[in-house]
Image 1 (cartoon, helix red, strand yellow):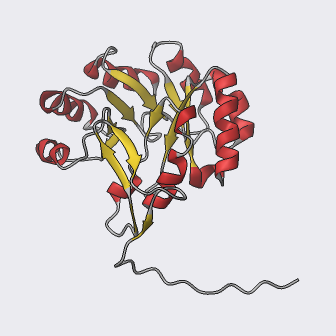
Image 2: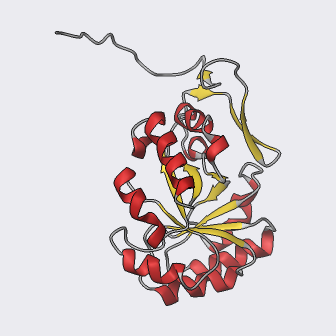
Length: 225
């Protein structure tokens, strides 16, 4: 999956051309321009769509209107349509559509995950949110047990974080690890989106390495007992 951020309608075609060739196009939503944006995306691109409202929709009717424009058969998922505390709205939308509703901000850790099936059909797990691959792996396995779909997501972060999460792809239904394509100063290299999927070029560790021109500064940390 690759993300089309909030854009002016007239810029959408060019921005899509600049994105890597992922199998699914994630469209940022949650604004007054949602329907115009979705129509333009559908005009210039034929891929399945994943709508990410980032808590931006206010009610179920607003969410249904955007989904209807895209078409139930083309939308593979909707992410965090309402405010993180509005479990009631997520539950209501879940009962109205057959496509999975993915929780992101509503599900910060294992405690919220246990409650997730009442309002969501999937969960977006992020390394920076979970706090480590061990917790992320356990949450992915538990999500499966609860009948939830699993998406591995990212913040706007380097290839190192995203490649680390990629090691858990065996437990995932969707990969949303395009964080490095959303920043201009990624100090790592080796993560690729190609032929609709993701891969790393390195053969050790997480498969990525520091760029020769990186500008990171490392300092020794002193430990005391």
